[in-house]
Image (cartoon, rainbow, N blue to C red; front, side, top):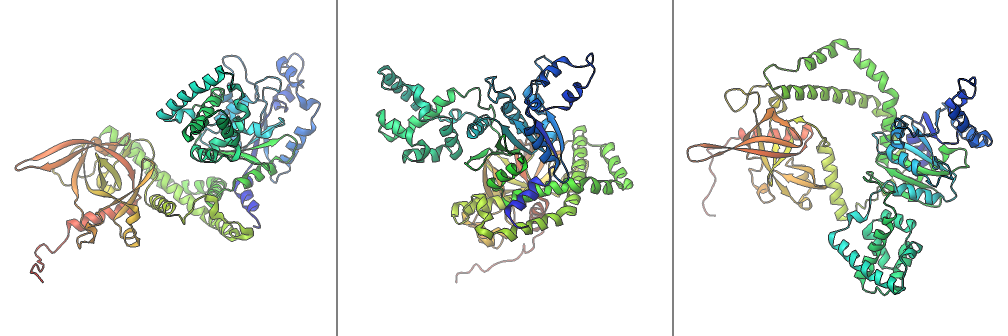
Length: 614
């Protein structure tokens, strides 16, 4: 391993095995075979369309591209689709077509699928691109185009993946823009300005630039009269908008005015993780589910162009390791899975438990949850086993990354764009790190109440501190006599919100805190406030007994519970809907279960202390 390019190649390029080329000028298997059929068996439409394709007279370009893919060791499995969309009601639309394009490791997508003379300029390709980047697979895509201006193609594609900026403006900003628009209309009436000339100062290039750096940074740069937005600033000056607020409103007005002409191009839902770079060397777009690079038709080695763009992206060590993990899992997964599943006695017993639906004395809804829980346990154990088998290869790859850090002044930490020397960034990093190691990812769907579930009742945070075995449907009831199919007793105790900036190493490692992601922020929850924790009894928690309804089923993050409170001669029962926020990993949940045990079994009830004045 000699370079960063080698790392990128091993993580992203080497795993590729198949490529799908979508180009209306390439030959398909169907048309090649159709041309050799007897006249009465030929599809006339396919035959006519095939003879209009450029490969018939200019085959060198497609031939060399395909040849380069074949020269790979092992050679690629190659398929070609000409993206012909049948106009009949039962024919494929571009989005339907895209649904099966993700089956290849690499997609080569021609930008002018409608033909250069159609006037649609990449519309179908952009629709396919959006659909492919919206599916559940990570995709590598090369947009292959004969257009002269590659940056303009890239701009049009990224615009099709983002939502309107105007729709995110605050109410006051919308009002300010409307007032400014009236003033601009007056200037037009006086023939002092023509809004049609706006694109000379603020076109798609400036719009994409503004969206890329973000509105706040764009306003700051614009107000300094520097960068690509400087001509627009000067125009605001020339029109008499001198006050800073007027100038800012003019930029927002320009964004709104440009987006009027982009209504049909902008996406209804913006793709997650959308970033891009359009440098002179290479142009690429990245989303959470794919990476797209842009290449002019001409270069034959498209993989080399893709690799160059991936290197320019500068994937972090974490992303390199993740890509390597996917590849290794795919490489040995089937064999390792088969070795495990050959243990028929084990899985016969497992399947019988699932099929029987657990105990007969629990709710049908709880039986469903129990089956799902058993299946989750099966998946968890299998994924842990597979990860165990491939971890050595991942570790070796990680060592290669570390060995290159610092070589040729390469600093992999800088790829994360995080300044850990900044106190604010450092606190954010600590919060996210501690949340990551202690808390399971949140997922949608009904789940069973379990130890470590953190929930809120109004503004009070609670953590469930009952062992998992006591929370399963059909288990013996704790703390109460009698038995119920639908009611599930459990123990929980309150947590208090604390300021992460006050935590030191003693706090962090004391076992009294957890880190919860809530409303896009990390919330630190402690057993005690900072003042109380200095007391000798800081291990004690004030736990309470609750009863969960519906067998402890959590649905739509809601848990129906009964809370108890004492009066002079009675017990009051209050029905409450709690909001479940997250679930701690088992080791961290066990810590809280032990806290309840310590509080319940403490000694020293007859001890006294020296209360005499010193």
